[in-house]
Length: 88
Image 1 (cartoon, rainbow, N blue to C red):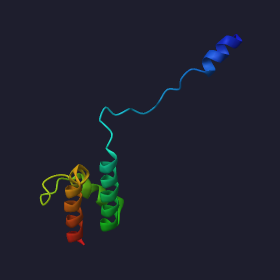
Image 2: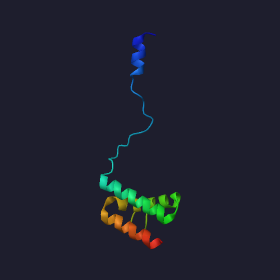
Image 3: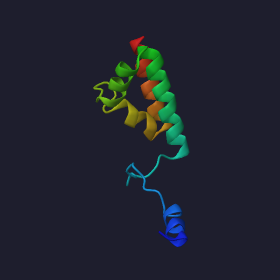
Image 4: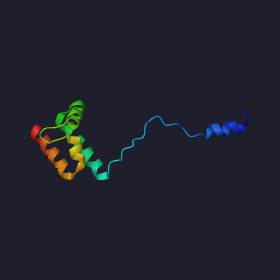
């Protein structure tokens, strides 16, 4: 093996082992609302599994998934906050 082979091997790009999403990233304000509603759900339910279930299952009172509603708009976040407050 020559020193040229060593150089080519050393500079080859690394393979990534994760998939890149084709979906657009959240806007900064939507990401902030997502983080806030997730924290509120974790606090309200006291556990990760129950909070994740609440955020991802359609809610009859909200008319959709709380996570989607909260990240869509400030009004949606307020609706989900009120729903979580009513559960306490």
